[in-house]
Length: 220
Image (cartoon, rainbow, N blue to C red; front, side):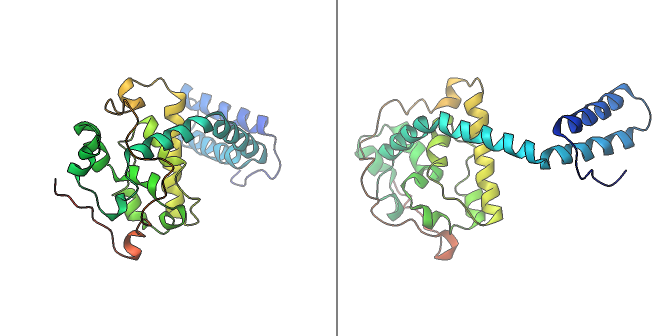
């Protein structure tokens, strides 16, 4: 019984999984054996060709449904992030260009948003530790997640791809959930910024540890 079935329908696998779960919840028989069965059939389901096709179709539909919203979000964030951000940025300069104090602070303290002003091929060379740390997405709102998501490359490195998948999972959760206003966008992002979203980025983003992490100017 340890061997996985070589051919089983998806519906049948789901029935086996449901039966094992019901037995476990009912407290009947060997709980450990039921847990093993649940694990076994869940693995079968996740690797089943039909399940994979359904998940791919669902993802394609999700990508298409919100494509316009993500493009608009990226343009909006680019209007708040100066093209020369990778040269170093001063909080006072952001305010001097017309951003409110709250908005300038948000842009200054959230390097993940700067990825909207970076070339994808350079971001692909970022060290995974920098993606997880300096460019973390855990504090981003729906608007910001959308903008960053469409700015990212298709990472070939497994660890980096996993990081991007985590961002995608959070974005999908946000796009299908009932979010409070604070999770939709920062309150200070009420109007477009002063920077041209179509302007070419002044410099290429640094490849993080490949060439040394660029530290922005922190003086106000």
